[in-house]
Image (cartoon, rainbow, N blue to C red; front, side, top):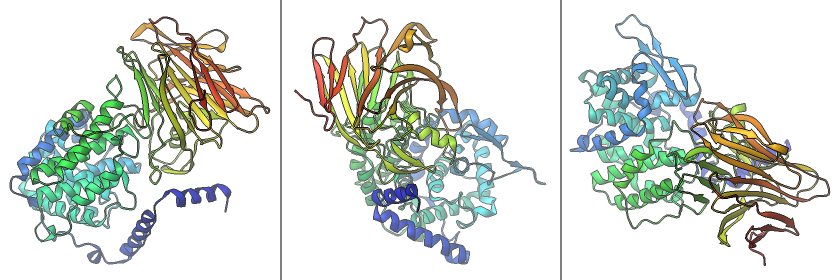
Length: 615
């Protein structure tokens, strides 16, 4: 077995949980058996019919109204959808199939990336379509879906009946039915399909995967349990205890969702809010613990939100997938519990001015160890808004399809971190896999002589690699260091800039100035730090949304460390405009100790091994 393959197998066994392997084996055997069994032995569709519980339809309209406000950009696509033009991931496809009848049919199995097909099958565009073009336009699509032979049973179309697609589609269908009664011609078929989807989902929750997929599964089942009468099929164990147990695991003490991607954090807030609405309607005892979870998630979301109103694009985040944060926060406030206590700064550190200058320092782990699907090689990353505008940014993510762009967006060089040579902080492979990975080995923060600072280190390159960020009130000093690396290496530290910003090199490859066209009078200065470092500007990509790539610029500070050096340091000094000149701290790395001499005479001395202050 090749060494890399063996390393990946070892990582798989080390980080994944035994129950994940057990569930994966069970699902694999189950899938093979289902392919060989007659369809009637796998699942008998149409045996049950769902209906609203008393008062449920009017109660569900609360969820429908909230959901309608969360993705306002979908309203603009309604007219195109009526014409058969569907746009997801910045890719448009014409799904009309001309027939002999009065109405063209839809192609429910287009040649498209799987995520695109998932968006099509989740049908989250239906409520916006009904709002903009009328209920008939939305139900025409539902009618087409119900009439597709491949949708008549779960073994015929793996996309349409995928547990994730069912989980995202059911709240949409119920929202549509709550606002607009299904037409009589399809009402019976509609409610039978709802029952079938609930029953199939109940048997096929994604326990092998977990994470956001499983929370979506449990959310859909919670809504069905609270609002729907499934007749004889309504029996079985309540989903509520499993929901609470999963939330207890997936929501960290900080209030952050454990996959550590802000977009997914927001999406999971939507899920928990829907569950809370269901619990309130059903007068369930789970409402109080759900309010605590919502409040903790809300606190974290408020804290990490940038001055420009957006979340930072950490890990697999995407602007278009993130719900409108103002509307999301308004919904969360309805369930606010003042006794909830989160700690948003457990894995992050930030400083901010009244003018919207904010630097965020991520000192937490890459992601969830047993589920690293949405994690990137971004240990000790920084992002920043300057003057209230996105400035120093994460590259983002282009798509989930295996290939060069997916790999590029997840690599170390796509993030604002230190890289040693061509080595990676972690072994990124396939679309969602991660083998060997670095870990944060320590973090400390404090205030010294009026300077705020935070320092952390990781072991992603086989030796201690650290970063300390110092805030003077008028400038940030970002210092990267490594200790114990064998042999010559090019150490490179990068700052990826939002495409709107204009960068210009200064004299001697030691300074770069930056300004935003909307405020050209505000000049920000980036100085190189390092005994023999060279500053340059390179061209890269910025992917704020799926299917979107925009050219941007990257400031790269590179320092060559010779064969006799086992340690080195370099960094940046970012000065704010309209402030007195901020002196640059002096740095010395020796004997496993990082010494930062502050301009006012104080010093920060940290042990490279443990991060504790020395002296």
